[in-house]
Image (cartoon, rainbow, N blue to C red):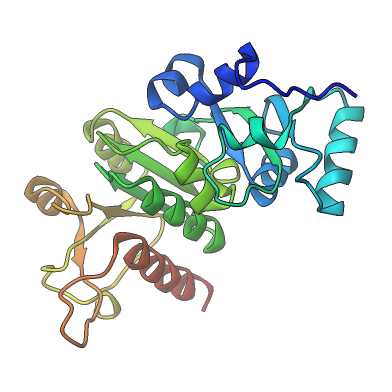
Length: 266
């Protein structure tokens, strides 16, 4: 069993490059680290260029069995030393399992739009941790797709993948350069646009919502533009107590998606 021990190995260098967005955009590849995230990619049959294992670090029986099964199916397994693994790991205590995967996007027309569809739309969201946590909520609450508009950060940033625990590979993701395409799509498919704002005139639990719908979430600092707020079918805010005037974007997204799912299923 060959184990790569040099950080200067050309494949290892290529893996490290994927920590930068420029390399991910150029190659269409991303670095997935962690047992749960890699297993999620395997379960969802995401195309993998490499499964990367540090045998001296990987102790999970489940992970070892999954790697062996993947290798039997023909997946390429790269075995490296702990020092080499640490050279591209973002963790203080790496668990010895990573993968190089192909980023997965779908088009708007590939989203499954039905009577109970709930879509989540992010505009210019900059924090990959927030994006990953929102993807996790989208998956947990049964939302049917995540649409990223404008300058929204990369869902395949290692920080986003880590925060999502790999659910970015389970959720259909659409990337749009601007809002016009989304708005025309929503009108054609009779999708209710629900704009969120701390200054919205109505609280979430006091507004009539219907499906199919799309929840619009703005950037962490600026929120949604005034144009989007005017364009939306309804504006909502989360009821707030205490002294805080707003919630973290990922937390707010989870609350709104939960409320929508509760209404749909009740």
